[in-house]
Image 1 (cartoon, helix red, strand yellow):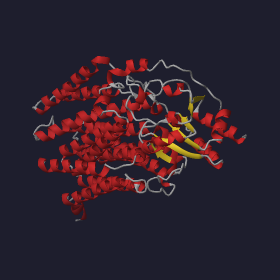
Image 2: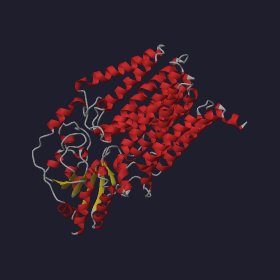
Image 3: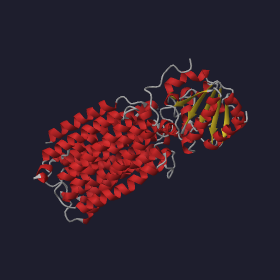
Amino acid sequence: MLAVFLQNPNFIHILYIVAFGLFIYGLSGLTGPRTAVRGNRIAAVGMAIAVIATLLLRSEGNWALIVIGIAIGTAVGVPAARRVHMTAMPQMVALFNGVGGGAVFLIAWAEFRNTHGYTAQATYITVFSLFAAIVGSVSFWGSNIAFGKLQELLPGRPITLGRAQQPVNGLIAAAAVACAVAIAAGSHQELLFVLMLLAAAVLGNLMVLPIGGADMPVVISLLNAFTGLSAAATGVALNNSALIVAGMIVGASGSILTNLMATAMNRSIPAIIAGGFGGGGVVEGASGAGEFAGTVRSTSAADVAVQLAYARQVVIVPGYGMAVAQAQHTVRELAKALEARGVQISYAIHPVAGRMPGHMNVLLAEADVPYEQLREMDDINPEFPRTDVALVIGANDVTNPAAKTNPASPIYGMPILDVESARSVVVIKRSMNPGFAGIDNELYFRPNTAMLFGDAKTAVAEIIAELANI
Amino acid sequence: MFVTNLTILVLAGFVGFAVISKVPNTLHTPLMSGTNAIHGIVLLGGLLVIGFAGNSVFNKVILVVAITFGTINIVGGFLVTDRMLEMFKRKPAPPPPPKDGDG
């Protein structure tokens, strides 16, 4: 009796409604710092309910295979999530997103085979399943490339086909769609399906390879939305409301997030997808920015310590270099030492500092930096003229004045932190190599800028040591 | 059936827009990670379709891989988001930073 009740489709449906109610409630919690932890856990509970409901619903066999799949997935996913460094978070998200897309296209493929090429399926089911297959495959391969770039397995700079990029992408997309149309029109050839997956795979690669590192967060967010949409399409094809709702919510929220990030960088999403940094402008932009008048002044840890110790107001501008060097705790120590001397400290957080929006906040929160000291760009920019020392730690492109002054620069128009208007600027940097966007930073050539070369963590530790001697 | 599903699809889209529209920059990364975990729900698709895999070994293999992928997406996604958010939680986070600054 109980089994009959538990497998009643209406009961399953009610469980699904509970599940996506929890998703929505959980997600709305994720939008505020107080409720975020709870929100995430509520969403996780919703997911557990959805999975259990689905296990109750299914009457067919292959239980052993399900256990194997879930066991392997857990064995891989849990340690990966536990061990990843906070600095490697963006590529981890890319990877988790990629496997989601992979699951989508594999499910569509299995569906194609189970139904012998969508025989006797309604047209809309075929269409949605094909859509899921293409988008899932693009997302899978695109995410893997994004992972490779962020993990520095692949070069971060754009890899493009130059002017041929757009026509080639267009042709390949057309090829994938042509295969899909042929299948929807009644062909049962598996070869066509495989060709379609392959074309989508090539497209995923070609879409992300030309994208410069600075645009990567936007791309991951976009691919996140893609995977959500493809999951929703899978839901329509399988007539499963939980999949439709959850997938679509991710598709919609992912699109908004993508748009927010692109706005923060003053980039349009089509321009980013069009490839390269600023489309064809990569080469010209880079060479145009290459010759600045002026020289670079290098300084020592002792000098910086003196400057900081006698400053009234210091603004720390963290960037990816701080993340890579795992310097957030050392930076916090420096800030504490300065505060003990009465120096006022704040942190200027550019929306896209690091490799993802909020990346710096996560790292600094890890190092116990008080929430009130983290200041957003629009809030802190008016303060720079009153700032004695702006201490730039491993940030580059987000401080480049060329974004305001040089229309030829690929980052022209991107809102930046007005670091150069501080009385004095100290930049801690490993070398004069250009940043992730691959362009020089004229900030370094300004007369009020001094460079302290070295690894962020070591350099900051040296400053702390010198500070103790003053 | 199609029309019902389409209705759900469109309404869910609006819900997605409405829920997310106001998020402080600080929470963008955890939010991306959290929504990322939620699309791991494709796991359900794998669980359902594997019931009809028939005798084809190939079908079974790709579906087990799909279930594995879906599980990684869900488990990894939620855990990693939780880890990120725990870092914000440690201090009693005050509401938006006061603007009184340095007077």
